[in-house]
Image (cartoon, rainbow, N blue to C red; front, side, top):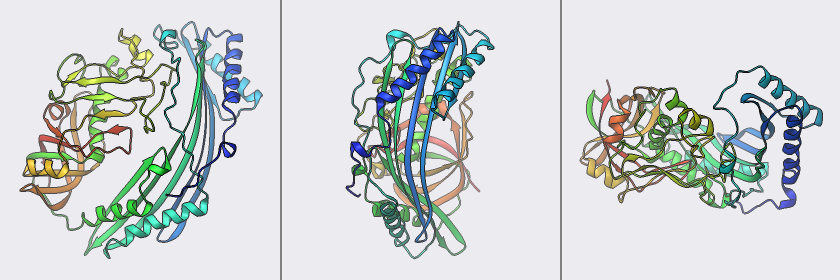
Length: 452
């Protein structure tokens, strides 16, 4: 990656103090209009994205977005409004709109700010801001390197969806009438590539991407492209499978979706609506005893890291599953009150969800499995959060004797998430760190595989 960096003087943001003053002003206006409690947040994002396809620059996009969001409460009657215009008259109109909405809504005894004693008071530096001094020409060079490397992997790669390089920076400031006022800057950079291979009448597509807060942590653009090309070529020559029961390994880069379904099932909104297959499971086994699932919101450079949640509540490391037993739900202040509980600091979601790995890599897990399916792609959204029924289109590789034999597609993997969770045999040490969920490959003891 290029060593170019932005200096503080080159920052695309106003000083944080200016944004802090803005949110304090709108809060003061709302209080003057009669609101008994108020919260406001402002965000500014700026970025560049370039896609090169078949050696030609296909898209070049600059973006600069900004928004102020305001929520007011009049005796637990809530109103919200937002504006992308920071002019004084627009901000005043936003305050008026939020207050007008609140005056016409019904009172909800569970609404209101998060409790004052839960507000973040210390804002640690999580090393989230690493701007990349990347101009359009440099981005085009990197995107070209990425796509060229993918296309050169094999003559059977005949087409491309392009190589893409993106770089974004943002600033967030939040405040409320509890006296909470904080903000921080962050960055996000990525390189990705998708190409298409052809063998006879068969065509297959695959991709690879890499993301990081710091551009120095990205792998080389050409390496990203090479991986995308190799992933595409290995999918050529697919065969069909007959319907059967067999063990299934979810590759690390898609295994995160399994734990996403778990988080959805233990989230407050699903629980108080009684629309979760894990309703009333707190303190009960939901995974095998070896599994540890926890949140690490304060990781340095973490893609999901944040010192506070969407309500200003201090984030902290916490267990959701320990020794296979559900330790905690995932709650914001509203859902916590609905359930007669306390917020877990998860307004806006879970940050850096972590599934502790085992000792073996994917190859060793496949050898342990012997015969079964390695899933490398999931298609569709056939998951019922109420019953836990799971059925999704899939593609991947059939494994025999612990070795990959041939690629397969046009299959469906099905089961019930409660059973699937309890029958996880192993989590690999090939942990994927490119997103908000950090997990290795996951071996499920048995699932239904529907084929031709």
